[in-house]
Image 1: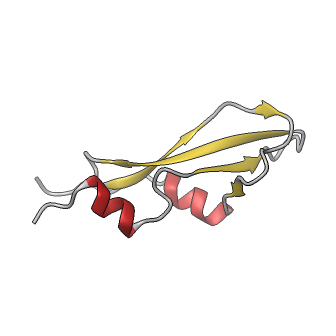
Image 2: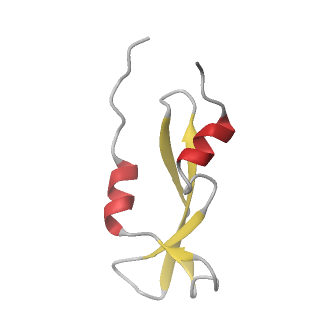
Length: 80
């Protein structure tokens, strides 16, 4: 049974959400992180913006450093 995009979104509530992280070298800047599912590797992929000057928009959640490091890992190869 193949899972659809909706199934993956239901399994992981972070898919399709945007988070922010403050830049470690200057707290006046932040980056946004959009999380999407990569259908080729069947894993989650972060899309990280360039640094933006200012404060994060209200209502946007900060991403935990542990979650960001897990998203940045290279997924292992799967059997075809």
